[in-house]
Image (cartoon, rainbow, N blue to C red):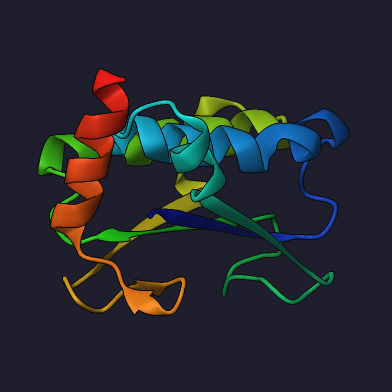
Length: 142
């Protein structure tokens, strides 16, 4: 079950972008994981938006908005190619939602956190990656 979190200064996203960014990021994460587009997988792809108060996120240089995307996935869910694709797409999604050109891509950082098998729990039990693969194959075939 993937989870994606965007941390951004309050007001850094355009109104239209703010309305859609969480679903857009979650959908991108599911695509790059190769999960089937089913209600089950969409409902279990959590997307958090954390907006920090003004001045809470700055660099040593200035206060222009910066964005942090953190994707948490089961270990092995993303190959290097898939990680690269996710980083590129998440960056484009954030820039578009903030109304920024691609030349500002350095403002967006994307961290991929891989959870070791047996370290993810949901519904009161441990969720194993192999079980998710079997479920994805089953739902893709349905």
